[in-house]
Length: 171
Image (cartoon, rainbow, N blue to C red; front, side, top):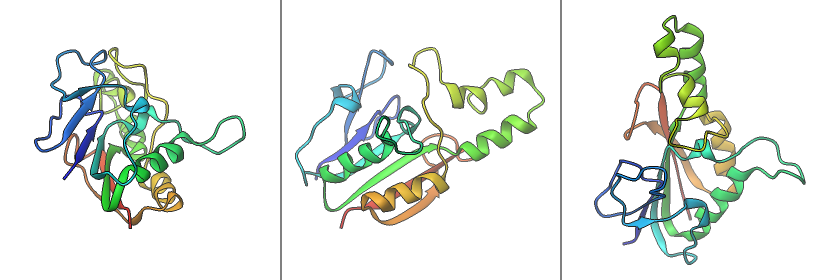
């Protein structure tokens, strides 16, 4: 069974090939030091892909000839890697919950924390976030690309209050 933990950061999963770019996080444990965008795997060769807190680095938005929806392209790439019956599990922040926190926050320190503005714009050790997601924006993309049994779950790798998991299977 071949399973990938892409953009693993500090979340090392036993039984997975843990992949991240150590130039962003030099102290993390990885099995493969690589840029997730540059990876290539054979079609129908992966049983499961876990991607936690990487979606914010993938541009979304409306398609145009000049700027295709990058998330659609990435989801398609990952789907080709999955074996029939394989699964993609993606955890990311829910922009609606982040926005609600920002609107209601009265403390300057908390407002700038990972619960607020940093979740939208990123940290010093990253290149900055490009997009923000919620179930209502990811579910249609998963379906359009061809994932089946798309479902939303409670987060398990980071903040249960702020994040969500979306998963889909290849049939």
